[in-house]
Length: 314
Image (cartoon, rainbow, N blue to C red; front, side, top):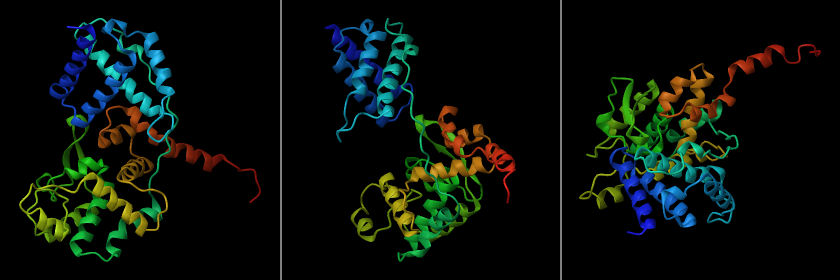
């Protein structure tokens, strides 16, 4: 067996390991496969021993000069995704005592500080009320209102919301368990508003779908009555969110993830500790959650109010 084929087999075994032992999603596995095959194609290596600090440095230079489909240089986070996949592969090889570059030798590129978009105050209230102001069938307005309230109440990712089933929600309780990234379970909480609108929506439903949020379009329902029961897709939920942002007169782009940001920001502004917010968001690392702290530091705000400009005349 040629040595290069051996290395390709190791990548295949690594991807199988991610699927079977680590329980990673098919999307994650496909992404890792793409990034690792790109590395192997660039390097044209024949054995794991050839992966050295110098070759990784050259690979990073090559990535930094690549362009995406729009003709733009690859973003730093996209470059980091390639390196994260390579580092995970090297960690797997080390676990199997296969000689190669130690995974800790790969450092990620420093990322520019992210600009977090979120809704608050007047914009948030207008946005949340928008579904009740449109001319749509009652079931659609109740569904869409419930979607917005649930997203803001729980901080769920759009894929997590899409996959929710009716039997996962007990409206007599204020919490339920959701399976998130990496199949990790976490508890999320329902506000009184979310419980109220979910109850009204579920009471109005006449369909037999097992999913919490489904398509109520009559033509679609008739077409698919004998087909597999499916929920609203993440893309459909995104379109719903964008629709009500326009109805509310909000000019900036609003997505389900902006509501996730709004959920986290609201908690931190009102005094929640960052470790608790990390748990509620389902972040594996506190570093991910810390993107919110620079816009929610109440202590700095109070210091500014108490000490800035005190000697100026009123």
